[in-house]
Length: 377
Image (cartoon, rainbow, N blue to C red; front, top):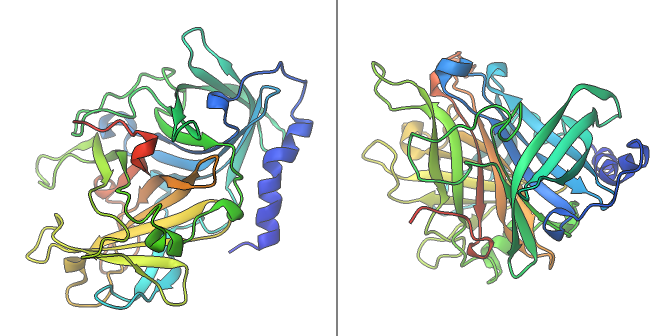
């Protein structure tokens, strides 16, 4: 894990890099009136089109009124077969297994990349973000523009949202994949939330607050998850598709009958989620969320208890989900945006086995009702 000083320097880049970003840009209204954003972006397509070359990116966008914007991000590509790594130990007690919480390799360290660019608005009101340089100021060979739909006035005006054209929609396996350039030449799905709260660690809600604070512990956080995955579990007929599922659910962190439990000694919480859809007579899921690194970072991991086959922990094909917290102008937690970067590993060796169709690569939001996620009726 990188030092706190190194991370502070990276976060400072969001502001300082603009000094050397190039010629002064014309003044431009901040998107939704918000400067600091947490954003999830990905390229997700049918296996017949991209041969499992999906990728996901999670990071910060910082907009300035002079028309400039910067991003720093973590990113993962399916073909790299990125692995899970231990982030902390969840010792929550009760019926929650004491196990390592794993995240995707690299998320505990400093951001992996970044860009500088400019932003403006199209005639039909979309936000156009054009990346022109790397974080260090090297010009890109070809600028890349993202066209975002903007939703303003969320959380009583304390937050705003950006989405790609088909991020929201019906759940199922027939997601409309935008043509190249509709959203971006490189990415095809994205979602982000912005406010004027700091992007630093001081703005991040703790796990104890999520479990104990009445502002947060009774809220059912929900959203959409666009994911490249297998069409079914039937080996003879399944193909690689792009689907859309729901995130979160009716559960809350502080439910009196079955609450999440805080870890002892680590900044995390765990839950043995009852009667979910795991295939077995044991239908419980083990879920964890933990604080990781600096900034707004959290990490989630979940797995079917039945897969542990009587052992306390499952060491193989869990679902790891790096996430960034959504914090509104008042400093209140409103949920997350995140990514999933699921590499299938052998249950004999624990190493990636190039079983591409078994992967889950996607982006999601999981937010409060006050952020008005567009859920199917």
